[in-house]
Image 1: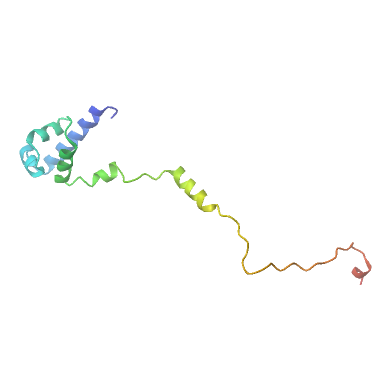
Image 2: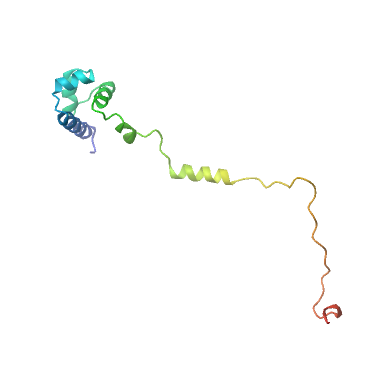
Length: 119
């Protein structure tokens, strides 16, 4: 389905199948969808129609929710998620509150073998 015409033709075939599964004539479908019969004919032939007419037909066939799959509300891109994680992970190091840190006990360094080490 590379061309717009091919997409419209496939959409028309699918809509016609859904109409026939309900055992509706084009006139019945048009009346249910509150569009003209010529609009249903154009849709099924793969010709262009107004978007609002397509929405009415999809709603009548119970297919309007399929638009959520075709056009999701938003697309989560992996790179955007990675950038968000990196921004969350970057935090400044802060000094501790509540006074000074305890200093470690000072020990004098000694060579091994000094008299204190020989016992």
